[in-house]
Image (cartoon, rainbow, N blue to C red):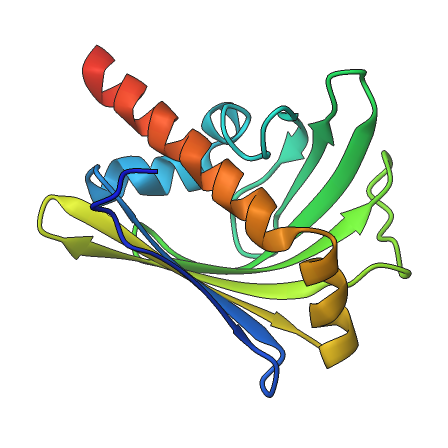
Length: 169
């Protein structure tokens, strides 16, 4: 990560939330596109050395993104994001959870509500993500699973993709 870019990962155990504030050296439209288009999400939405594969995506309120994070050996960890509301290039909300290859949610793992907001910071973009869990136990589970480390690596990949996209434009 660039040293001059904001990155905050704040855990609020009283509210069962994680707040992530991350600044990117790119315009808001491009950062939005990287969060909302499967062909771009597939290039960054997994911590190294994993990769991402989209099974299906329908980016609209009531739509979903069904994806897998793929280990180098080929093992897949499936996710399901269900979009609740969308305000183009400003905000989207969604429910995120672990699932199987068919998209059936795993009731044994936490599900989270995501509220993702995109704001201009000069010629940069600040993405603020509020991730809410039903219980402290659910919050602690994802922290123990390595949420902070995984998200840090994932967002570094987004930095790399944004740099590459801007250089090729």
